[in-house]
Structures are given as structure tokens and as C-alpha cells.
Image (cartoon, rainbow, N blue to C red; front, side, top):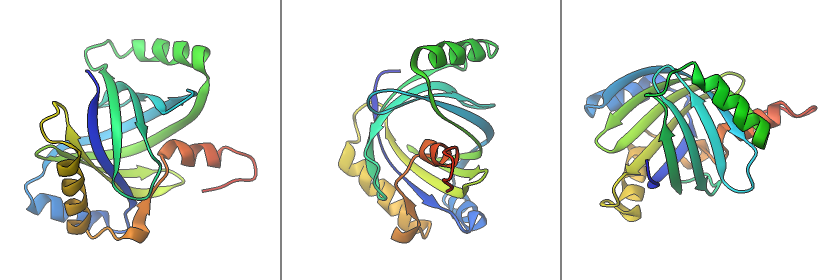
Length: 184
């Protein structure tokens, strides 16, 4: 898949059931619960991760600022669902040998969509519950301003105040928690 644009935000989620109700009332399509293992590789800029999930499998490179607000993210993704799952391990080993591993994140993710906006309700062991909102422009027809407006509208609808917003990637949480003397 060629590069596409997302505007996204992440927030701590104190009330996942409330988020589920708001999304259900909005007619969100439930895509399922994914057990995901993301391996983040060491790269000079941006983030490169191999996602091994029960629903989503992909090699993803993205660049975005780490700010606790809605933010632009340039995403290039190779979907791996058509590839035999047993090749995931060989791909992970090859990338690990070539680049080194920055962090590994395992999580439980509920996936929902309203039009072009993707919602994740995540449970990350050791870090807690989160909601992510991704307004996605796959073909360049929506533009950053519209995506940002969608993201911020959903932030308000879901009752996610500025104090709940998170700047860091889950990889940053994992890297901190694996550093001796550090915790998240």
C-alpha cells in the first residue's frame, strides 16, 4: 500500500464501556478483538513495526510528532494477511538481525470504524487501557484539515479531555519499562 495520511490521537481510557456505548450509538462497525504483538525495530527516523495479530498483520513505517494532541502521521504499510502466517517469524528474525529491536508490545485491541475513522480500545499489560482515534485518508481526497476536525470531534464525543491525551507510542512505554530502574 502506498503512503497515506492519518491524523490520530491516543488517550488513557478510564471508562471503556462508555466509549463502546458512544461508538455503538454512532453506528460504529465492530471488526473484532485482535491479540497483537508489535515488534518495533531500531531505525534512524520514524518507527518501523511488524504487527503480528489475529486480525491485522502488517509491516508499518510511520513518522509523526510525539505530542499529546491530534497529530499528523505519514504511514507506509505492507499488509501481510495474504502471506502465510508461518512466515511472520522469519520476517521478524530477518528484520531483528538487520536492524535490532527497540521494543516489543503485546496488547488486546478492539477495532471499530465509523466511515474513515478507526477506533482502537486497547488493553496494554503494565500500561493500562487506552483509546486511539485514527482519521484516515487513503487516497488524498480528505486532506489534513478535515482529518484533524474529525479526530477532534470524536475526542469531544468520547469525553477525552486534554489531561487524558498521551504523546508516547506504546513502544516508548515498553522501552521505558524494560530499562532497569524505570517504570511506566
